[in-house]
Amino acid sequence: MNRTLIVAFLIFSLASTAAHANNDMVVGDGRIDGTKAKEYDLTWRQCSLQGEAWVRGADLSESLTVTGPDELSLRQVTHRDGGITVEASSNYDRKSFAPLQLEQTATSGDGDQLAHSIHRLTADGYEGHVNRGGESKDVSGDVNSHMLHGGAMGLPLALLPYQDTPLKFNASMIAFDASYTVTAEWAGSETIEYEGEAVDVWFVDIEWLHEGLGDIYPPGPDASGGRYWVAHNPPAGFPYVLRYKTDTYAIEFLPLACPD
Image (cartoon, rainbow, N blue to C red; front, side, top):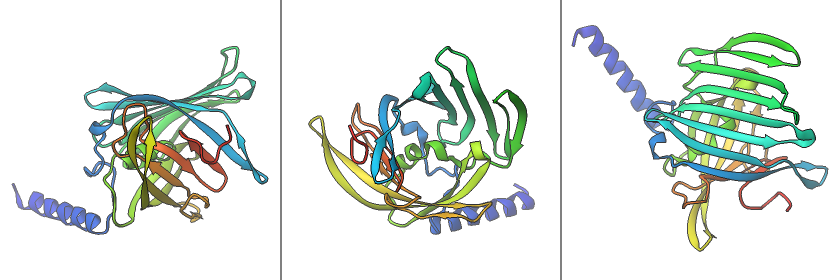
């Protein structure tokens, strides 16, 4: 190994050590291991706070599939009012859970395509295509595969061990071409019973910092940043993410905020 490579290796090693010391995470640094994720096909209820009442919305069905030795596929389907179906499919590097491709399609009850978008991500950014409202355009940006996908962030967090100190990382909402600095804090735990089995559930409170606007969404279930309820080792039929709730929105497998 020549001197230049030795210096580069030492710099990388020192940077990685400093990141772990500060409990900072970069997608692909080995802390998330997607090979531990088990396949599932489950449904969550959704609701939103309207005035002083929580109002039930459309359910969301989600399935995780191992599509190859190096890739995972996550599919989310919602059937909305008026017969509209929205399907979001995302592909990930299986080991790191780095997002590789995000695709979303909306169709009418007659099967006509109302909107479609696809984004392909690399470590350097993304390229894609959006077709909406009769307008079609190519898109590109800085959101990259070193950021967790903000629309499906609970699952990779559930794969992590319990963190004693807040964990900081980057995430994205690619539909808005937005990136965030996220601080996740494991805020406690509980054990619940599900179909005769005890399930350990961890609370993970999330603070979002919009990197472009500087807006901060505070952590906790009664704030705009929200809380995840995650199960690190769920039994069959129980999800990795039991619930995500903010002050105005909830998606949950077992009822807490959403009415029956």
